[in-house]
Image (cartoon, rainbow, N blue to C red; front, side, top):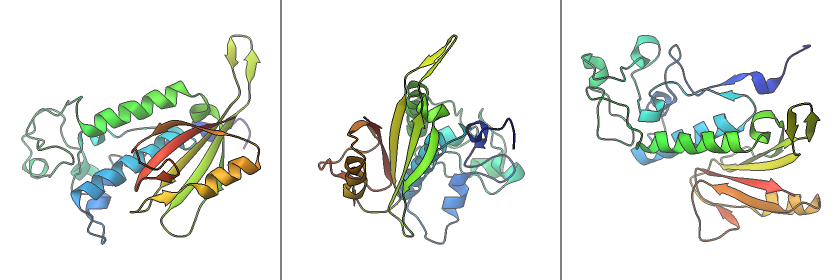
Length: 217
């Protein structure tokens, strides 16, 4: 369609109608542990932030809200709630319930999403860059995309060209990055690490359920 841009489409993991992604994980037949639910929530939101489109966080997701389904079952109060069906929820990454005030800027999700937002603003290619899938597989493992943006020098709009590689590991085990780095080398580009969500002892690996961002030069 004319006058449209995929970078202007809205990305979200959940909303007031369909419910929260955290609830979907909780109901999964895989019976994920709480730690696995936390990791997968963080990874899903990273994909939302760094894939093309405008990231939108559903209120409360940054406080570990889970809910009991869609519509009203996903509309918990941020202020101390008197709704029993909300207050019996087991929130993620906190001991609080919705019966308490939930404006915790130290919550793991709040802190993580704040970091994602900082990266999103710091690197224009994450907002405006053309997206291309450079590696994927049928099973859980590496999913990698590039976000490429050409230099802009029009009036007050000025920015340098930028080429980013974002690697997600959707597997429960560490994955080697050979296939990605070899591809970059073949294109005569060097990958400089910008951010890694989980540190590893081996720079040639990416930790389970984590992501890394590289600048290609």
